[in-house]
Length: 539
Image (cartoon, rainbow, N blue to C red):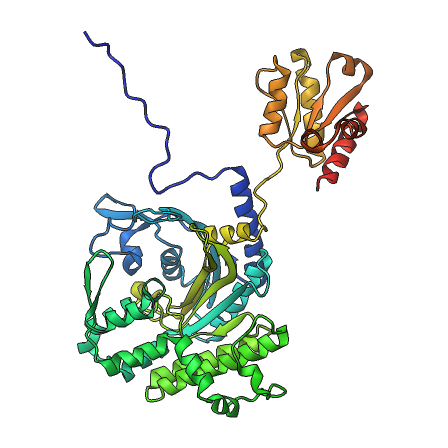
């Protein structure tokens, strides 16, 4: 007869698509978010914390699939209502702005930080729970609000340790795309299907490249697996207009090579001292900062000139170009020049979602990919204007603009640059040599804590002293305190410098080890001063 094995034990494993964060990681993330929050607060934004759960109805168009409310989000039905874990931090803001519209100031400026959840297929570096860090202005129609968001984003990146020259914020405008659609003959209700395919194709530019997007504008595209995606079926002339909008590198080279420089210069009030044609070449690594800034300033003007030329027959397109010009002027007036923020028609970030300016922060330094090949780090933040934010709740159009920072991406960037401390120092450990003197050991711990020093008493089995020191090593403790019966009788303590001890054990000769003792005996009254001195030596 088979034995009854009892209930099956659960597996101790993280659910698929989720991960655990331990001490140093949590500390590093909090430190980074605190620096970003300080920048947002300095700009006059207020913190907002919303519930992790929203109604599916409130999430609305922010859902990945409105026809299947439990797809893309973690949702459940309760009392005939569908609830879901928040998909992002924007949908809760929409609900808050509508719910408290009579109490909140207008404009309402808020920042929010916290986890969001997406019920999507996980992959390498892609988790179902991750952190976002958002800042938004609701109720401001002026593009000055968009310019301010861009400036604030630049300040936030520099505050956490991304140096100037290692990032660029690229700005474009959805209205310009609307103008492009109009010029290409894709405006009107009867062209809605084609516009949708074009927008989805443009949003895939980073993944598919110029040729892939071009194929989707035409008959369609077959991927590597053989699956065919039907295209928008545009005429060659229509596709050419769209491609001139998104393939900025090609258009920039055309402008530079064809001497359109003269037209750009003629429309520039700040040409000033930069009349030398060499400044309008490509940006080169050997340029001094002034040359780089002057060159990029001209390329900014070339971008605005190019877009103006492309949509000059469209009212909405021209309005979008004018907004880009205003944003550029406002930023440069504050000192945020093209060394940090540039006009870039190739930015197509979520253009189906945004209604005006869009922006993306890209880190430009090189890292190695999983195959050891060099590549730029890429995007860590993005946002733009979305003026239909609150309208679905109130029926009234409410202008809004904002940005979202990918917290995990930015942490990875800081780690890649060596600017993230993930080796957080552990507490000072007061060891236990005599169980009958626990009160004395606890008094030492409290004295250290009262002086602002992180400390703990060993609470495991004190029988094996070696295990206590192994525990201190695993805790990455800088110092261990030892007081046995003999030390107590003489009112002294042994203070062991664990960091120096580990270093000497690895590197020092016997003579050096003897000349730099890692353990010293000091009067009990000097405990705090000695610990502070040792910790000061190690930073």
